[in-house]
Length: 79
Image (tube, rainbow, N blue to C red; front, side):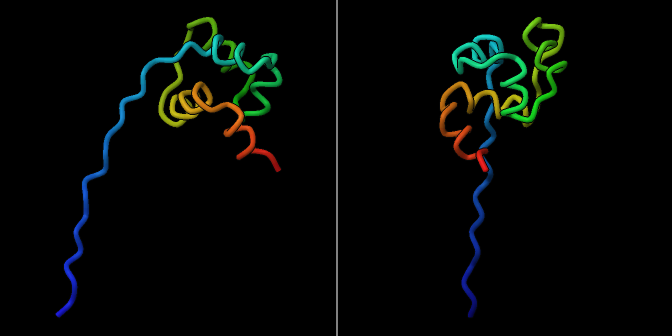
């Protein structure tokens, strides 16, 4: 007899809105540096900071992680 496979439901996380300008300011980076470091277009970053648009999906997840552990994210993204 084979073993039964038990699968747990994925936990759904809801990410809170973020203050993109504050997150960037805490990293000490300019808009250009922040955009380049995290793969975001400068134009999109500016829209987020002005509040014209809000980050969604993976971008929102990334910004939540950067807000909590910016050095770890930068280390993980470094080549």
